[in-house]
Picture 1 (tube, rainbow, N blue to C red):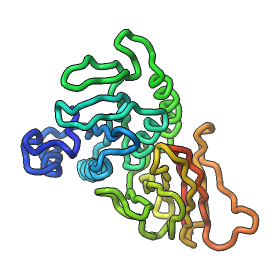
Picture 2: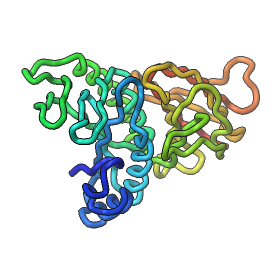
Picture 3: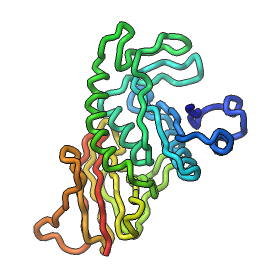
Length: 277
């Protein structure tokens, strides 16, 4: 079963607000996973105003219920104005990658596509999805295959991890998003806007944390840097191709607190394992 997104009207939810809807659903149905859909890619380069707020709420309730969160990402363009939805753009490869990485930052354990087959046009007018109505592969099929190859490796590292927090390092965080604040592992963030997911591995101890840094844009590259707390003495980067963590050595002449320089292409992310004293 799949739950509504956060912009659904109270008349469709059956209750006064989204949080009550999720609470009742989890208490009564007791599902093995909390699955939802939210298609954020509006016309042009915009995203839906409540996308991150929706993810923050889903994350909170999946942790409360102690079940995995799954999400449908948008893999087709459509015009839903007849049913009260603004037109959605046709996703690019980096749009797919961005949705996947944002979902991982918010703790997602399952990625699904809306849609695989191109739907018949009813109330909404759909473009071509991964598979055309005649059964042929569209360019989106190749994009999804590329993103899935990345996800198979990244999932290997992230499935065992438990979400601790999600913060947005930018001047004005979007609706429902928590701003970055210094903590025991990271002191500051500089440069282009990024989203940071904090994770721990159960049983590993308080000295270790995992940081997933996601480019906040699916269109532009991001050059940023995260300065660690002076107590962080070990940094390893997850190598997607090698499927393993590789130690990050200090650069020549680097002194004081460790620093993670980031050069992220549109929609890209990097995963790090941190060790404190």
